[in-house]
Image 1: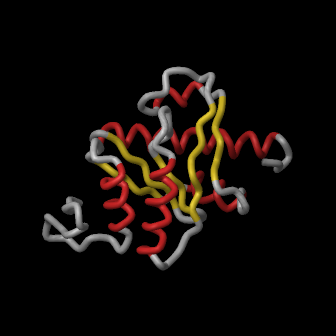
Image 2: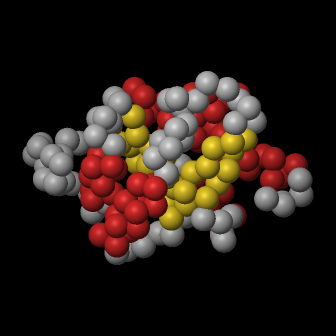
Length: 153
């Protein structure tokens, strides 16, 4: 749904309780026009498995080139993992602080919420969808690698 910069609905719908997480991303990245939130199995499962991790590092995957600004698989990129919280304003402040410090290039335009889901963003809806699709693929690959290694992360 469409909301303004303050999270106020621009449609005859009720915004999600997590709208402030979307708006903080728009504030951090004025060039983006789409933020998507998903609750996919690979994201929920992997962030639960990596219970102590504050980030997930991805390296050597050809699919990393699906993310804007990444042109080689010979790279390491990390995605922050935040603890889930019912205190959404506090989570939004934490996200703003952490994601705001990660504005280096290249980066993965996404963040993970442990046992909950992910946010991915882009210059438009198409790019944000590509980010989410690539993220879900890569996390599925990480899960398979853990299975093949006998459960070790």
